[in-house]
Image 1 (tube, one colour):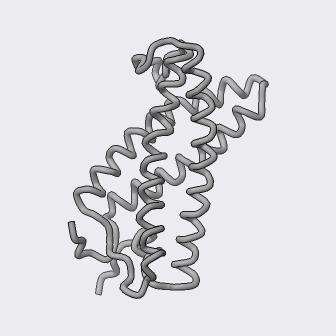
Image 2 (cartoon, helix red, strand yellow):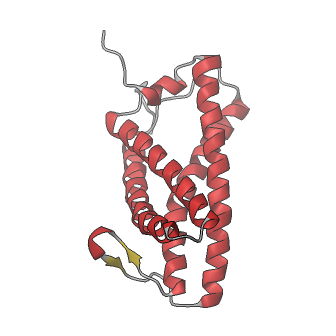
Length: 181
């Protein structure tokens, strides 16, 4: 699909900024869960699980919107290596946004715990109860959380580079819609 627009759609922007807030929240909650053993730990877990499922649903919607509408073209004067890094980093972001909640869900399933959503709704297990599998998935969830954090930092750095240094419209294509004449 060859995009002919210069800005992301309002739905794409809403999904982007909503997910940015949720993902940062999840990363900080995850750090809090690892760093505490107090009664706050249970509260953080109770927030973390349904938020992860919300992110999973939003990323599926976001992928659909991206496939349907595409994205604005990168600036013509952008060097080829930067174009490759931009495309690859977006693929990595989407892969991590999809993988993290699925691995978390699988991890809980392997541990024998249900994913409880708000209102007491429980999701079914997606892998069998298996302590060894739980250990692998827990480590993977931790390492991928770190990878997501680093990728988000890189994404933020690139956005600031485009918005403050290059001023080439890449940042504004997601920050605000097209201006009306």
